[in-house]
Length: 331
Length: 251
Image (cartoon, rainbow over all chains, first blue to last red; front, side, top):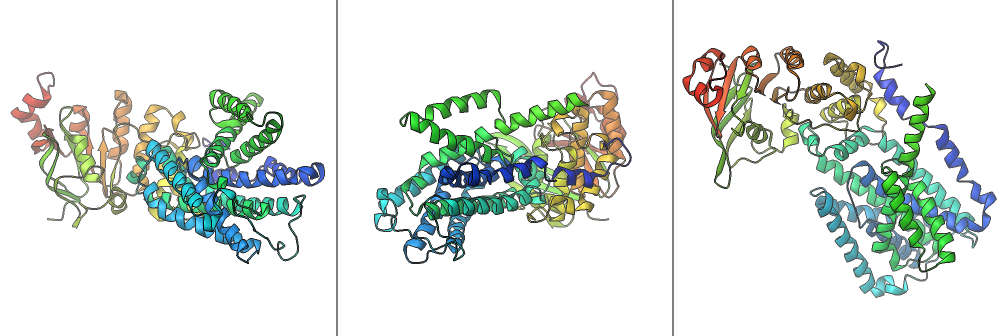
């Protein structure tokens, strides 16, 4: 049904665009494969799921609303320390730890969003970078609370739902991380396909035009920034709970930069871009660091340059273009 | 006498020593189509920027109907019904035309903050967007990304976006800029066909178009309103002929 035909139904057309693809189901089902195929790598799989969740949170602001951040680890770290401290001080129930991590990160996200909504581009990079470094240094100095550079020790988690203990092989950790990732993904997917999601894309596409069609861009930005911070907080809390420790690294610049690299590799603004990026990045780190512990980032650097030069919309963007050209050849 | 749709009182703006709006007085009656003309750099676009709140005036008052909107931010002025288009296309390149117009309608209807319901739930909004696109003869290209549309179609989409906000007063900044002459006539007949509930002030350089579609003409020069009158008065005005129309134009 083309728009030229008199029977064109615009609502049905937009609905069709939000439908689940078979490939999405394949993707989520294949996430279960590590349980059977790589039971020795479940700890890594769980870290990939957490990184993917973190990348998803950045994608909401960067890929959809066009808000650049080089300090997103701030919210990841806030979530991690909140959940870690809660468990350390006697309440090891995992789900409430996630909620706390999300709330603390969302609160700080909301407060900072008033500054974020006023700036763009380079200014925004500098502000988020500075904010991230500030928080990192604060956590470093507050040794009494965070354990400083030694990290937060003594995090003891209770069994998940009172039943599943966090085992050494990572069965519970991966199942837990994957389920949380999937749940947050469902919410995010709905958000992207909502009227709000459309407005976010409007801000990304043309922030100048938005007020001219009556859109309160700043209010939209504050909202998505808060939500993105909350999701980053959940990701951080997951890492704290599944590893039963929180290191200063959760707040580091390196983590902010890594997640940006992951998103650019996979493809920003594509929902699954962060997932693809996280898998490639984490597996590459695991493999390369075995060979050259000092220089493993070299491989990532080469990959990043290649992707940015030849696939400006990331790996998924490149695949989508390939699929589109196949389809046009087929017809 | 009824209140004009849009009134401007003593509007001033300067950048340093450059006066871009000098004591502007303007009234656009309900349902009228007025043209704003003047040489390049006269301050026409600046005046639109001031009225829509994209620039902050140094002094003066802007009334929409009876309401003073001088201090409202741009998006709230749009919500009240004062809407503009842009001389240089200001669109959403990667959104389809249907999505872009639906976006504007979503903002108007107040559904834009809703993130827990899917967009296709709002069938009315989408149907309305499609109807606007069809009325501007963009129906057949509405699923194409904006950046792939022909230039003339993009100019029409500019207007479609403005219409989606249900304006009372529409400020059109050279709606036919860059459009070939034959297409420009078509574009202006689309504008002339708009509901009389919408009062329109348009900037245009093509004198044929101005004299055909405007009931009154406002001439701006150097940040001031030089003269205002009916097309016949403007055509006969010696001052206007000297500073603006020049000797080339025989009107």
